Image 1 (cartoon, rainbow, N blue to C red):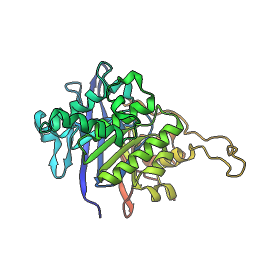
Image 2: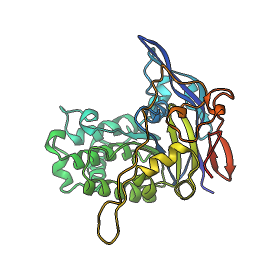
Image 3: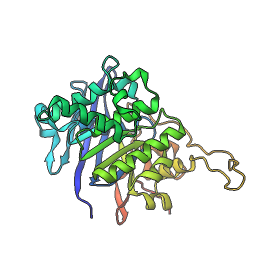
Image 4: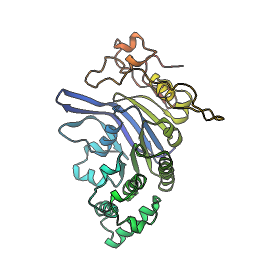
Length: 330
């Protein structure tokens, strides 16, 4: 079995707002293994990105706060690390690719300077010439043509796919143990998306890093991930290896997400009928119902779901397959 390199235990993250306190992440547990990809899926607002930012130590106080839980990187609790120690880990041992490169890249610095900046912080033993050489090598590694020329260019001079590759180059510059990819292909067309996913798979094999892949696209999950955690309203409602989840989904929310994947006839290429949707809306975190948060959108709801037994626990159905539901599907 692969080495466990990151373990998130009972993570709870709160935010203070003008309307009061909300809990954006509530009791989340995740395991990340060396050389494996963990997919985290769910609708917008389910807590995926907040979980990732918590791992990176980027929850901004005082409005946000990790109120309880542990984030263990090779046995050390990152939540107990001083700020200076976290700076040494962030971008070095644990790196992150954000959703939109144009808001993450600095528009007034060349892409080369932004890669070199990471090396200045974490690999200061290198000479300036070695840093430039490594930055160009990283651009070459992520498949950017004419890397010596691109090194001197600014983000606005590159295409969307190129900018995303630059973000990957920055994240991988220090060869991290863990890469968090927060919807890295959302703003890209299908062709470029496939190239980025192939690139990440290749780099994972070459570097042996663990990946947390955050997305709302289950089609991408099926192609890239080894294990999957499905999130809803700040909680994990189902966890399994990717094969089991797609073959035998148990939570009604997971099934609803899978039914929403477009399917086409293999011979004619026509779409197979009307695309199903999940009825209703994700409830506001200010007005979560007692009991299961999915109850108002669920076709299998019972009185147990409406609060008489509290929130359903994430319980094992089979080896490695867990579901948080009082009435799981057979």
